[in-house]
Image: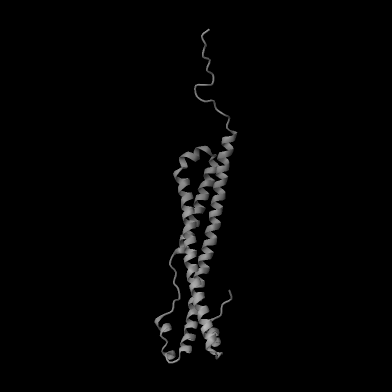
Length: 194
């Protein structure tokens, strides 16, 4: 979304007469502010979900290591370790996206503009300018969260791909392994009474 800088917004807010325009701009600003705030919450939720999936996969790999490590070749253990390391980095990036960021929120001086207290339309125009700055601040934070989430999801996908390779190696070894007879059945030549 193209962004207007603050001086241009202030100039635009001074170049019209209609109070209906001010009302419409103010209502739209409130909607955009609410959406920007909700986007932060949604991105945080998604980041926690990605970090949770990553942690669950890593936890599964680590806790079941004695089981699956004997079923794969040595190189596959290295691939699993690389996948786990990549997953740790991706999970850390997802958690970093949830870290609280500094937001440009309206201040007391934005809310109670002394020069505009005698004119409701002028006060509302001041609020619009303040909303614009706050929305821009929220969108900057959202952009950094999106970048971190994209990277963490890509790393999660790489981790899963590497672990699928390990699983493929275990499956290949299981299929190629000659079938072993059950204990006590092979080579048993019990004599039958005649």
